[in-house]
Image (cartoon, rainbow, N blue to C red; front, side, top):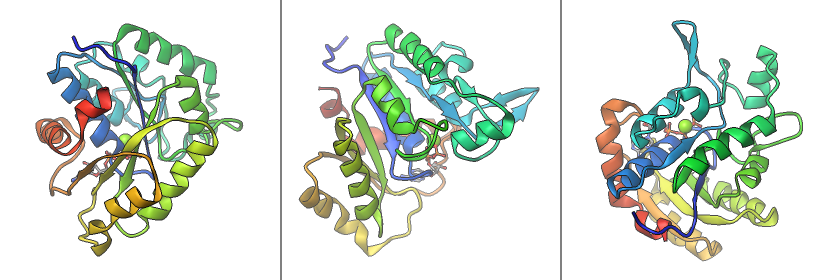
Length: 240
Ligand SMILES: Nc1ncnc2c1ncn2[C@@H]1O[C@H](COP(=O)(O)OP(=O)(O)OP(=O)(O)O)[C@@H](O)[C@H]1O
Ligand SMILES: [Mg+2]
C-alpha cells in the first residue's frame, strides 16, 4: 500500500454532464489497480429510476462497481431521488427532508474504512442541496480537496474560472482541473483551452481527456473509461 498524504478528492464539475462520473469512476479503478481500495460516495443522486420498488442511483452503482466497493448502495448514495432536478427541488417534490448531518455521518462511515475516498457531487458547486446548503457546504463538510471537471470547448474559460474563483474565495482547496470532452464537438477553442486556463489560474491542469464515441458511464465501458483516465490524467500526481 502506498503512503497517502491526503485522504481523497471531492469531484465536482462546471456543470451537469461534464464527465464527473466518468473521471471519478476511472480514478477509482486506477486506484484499485494500484492496490488501493477507494471508498466512493455520492451524497445525493437525482433522476433515479424505479426498479423492483427501489430507486436505483446509476452514478452510485457505477462508482461502486469501479471501486470494487462492498458497502450497500444505500450507504454509498444516502439520498436517492426520482426527479431529474437539483437535490433541493427533487427532495421537496417528494417530501424528503435532506439532512446534512446524515450525509456527514454516511461520509465519515465510508471514509473511515478506506485509505482514500472519492466523492462525486451533483451538478456544479452552487447547486442547492437544501434551502440553506449548496454543494460547497458539502465540500467543506467532507474536508477534501476538490477536483474540478470542466467541459472542453467554447465557454469553458468562463465557467472554469468562475468556479475556481468562488472556491478560492470560500477557502476550498482545489487539487486541480481535468478538462474533458464529453460531446466531441471539435470546437476550435479546444486547442487553446489548456494554455489559457494555465495563464489565468494557478490551479494545476491534471489532464485533458479527448472524446471517444460510444462510451457511456456503464459497466460495458468500464475498462475503456479506466484506460482513458489512466492514460490522460496524472493519477499519481494526484495521489502525492
Ligand atoms: N471523454 C469522453 N468521451 C466520450 N464520452 C464521454 C466522455 N466523458 C463523458 N462522456 C459521456 O458523457 C456523458 C456524461 O458524463 P458523466 O455521466 O460522467 O457526467 P456527470 O458530470 O457525471 O453528469 P451528472 O451531473 O449527471 O452526474 C456520459 O454518458 C459519459 O459516458
Ligand atoms: Mg454523474
